[in-house]
Length: 251
Image (cartoon, rainbow, N blue to C red; front, side, top):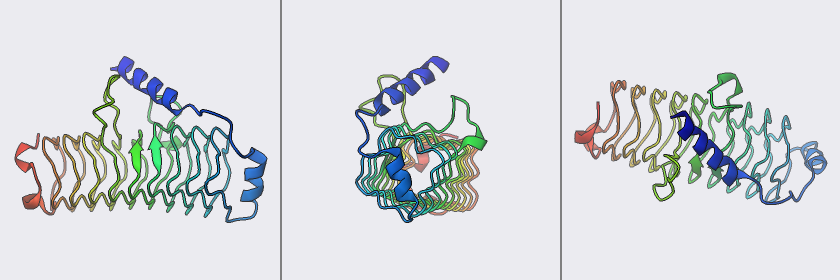
């Protein structure tokens, strides 16, 4: 198992490596940030070390942040619609209420190593991931109230030669999150806090919901075929009678 995880981590780092130099310098970005809200829409910021920068409310729609370092950065309320955040370093970054509609977040560096360190976790409370593509290890991250409507969070089974690469929300705080029509196929939601979360029309095919807290969640029209709900708290779950694959749940 450790070797498999190391191979997957290596694959993500290879895929996340920036291809070229950024369009802007660090100093230019700092100057833009000094006069908020900064307008960096569509700019190439790939590979830049933007650690600690305050880009609250900034416009970064369509920006390329591939491989950039955002360690400790503040992007509260920033507009990152359609931005490329593949391979970004996210330790302690604050994306509270940020807009990430249609953004790509593939293989970000969320913790310094393979261990989950809560003190290093980024914050995505209230963030909007509508239509985004997210394949990331976001274990124990605060994503309370986040929106994932129509987001693609499921494993791509056409590209799994080095092991299962999937979204990992294990132990994450997703209370009140909206996953309406999202693809969560094979996603890891083990022990996640999902009280009051909405999964209307979502695909949870073979998702790992073991030990998850689903009290008051709404699964109306969701596909739960072969989902693992062993040890999950499912009191007052809404719409179970209108969900698909309930008879195949693994408990």
